[in-house]
Image 1: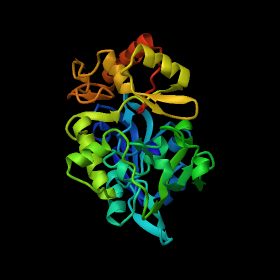
Image 2 (image 1 turned 60 degrees about the vertical axis):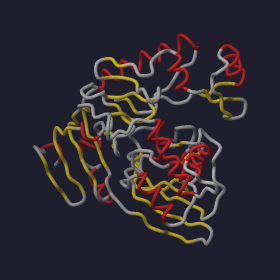
Image 3 (image 1 turned 135 degrees about the vertical axis):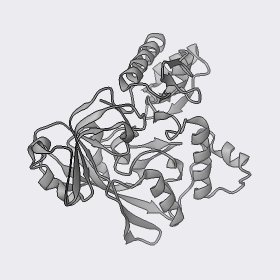
Image 4 (image 1 turned 180 degrees about the horizontal axis):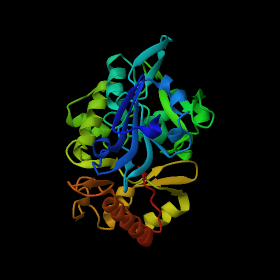
Length: 350
């Protein structure tokens, strides 16, 4: 039984580690530990696992690549990881295909798999860190594209009913960097995602310098793989690489406000970028707001704000999660005080 585990144990379909270090399992690389860490290699083992008291009644955190989490403390319960791998063509519909991807697959690897097999659509989402299983939770997006546009079905294990189920796109309640899964943390475990991808689709080039990057590459006629290359170059130039310095990408969402508020801000601050959002709303640049408050490049000990992009908080080496979160709160308070805008963190803060 998990309650009596000491050290490391292995069972068919999963392994369990007690008092497990998590520093290597989060891209901020901050120190933290979990009371229990369970790696599930076969999702079919989940129903039996959740009969155990530690999972049935305790605190459970589902962790993918750790690219969307900040640990400010140890986790007093179970961390559950689903590293299962696999990509499978389910249906070939001629001009499109339905593709099943297991939750543990690396997101960027899948993007390049799709491009290599002649599918179009995911190119603007190249180089986003994390796993496929994490993609629908946050409804990842970049350069004018959101992953929900391509998701047909999400396969989940529902802790409440202790059973597997499948949710269609509409049932996932996708919104800007949000979903049903994010709004009900801990209940649903994404075990696989099914994508409907097309073989031909109009490329999206009119966002945040994509056309300019293609031109700098000497590309006159863009293709999906070339757009992925342009997006990757933009990301590497603008955002610090988590392999080089601890970070979780964009730490704050771009706020969405009513048109009248956006226009009032634009009058007071003519260089503030605005983008169309839902009807009657505009999206503001969180990076601009943070930089205007003087935080870009700021360093407090080993916690800091990237000099490449004001949206990215970084760990210069030995920062704790609590130190990074304290800096994030200073930024939140400063932006609220100066602009009257409440920023919202993107990562899950533990």
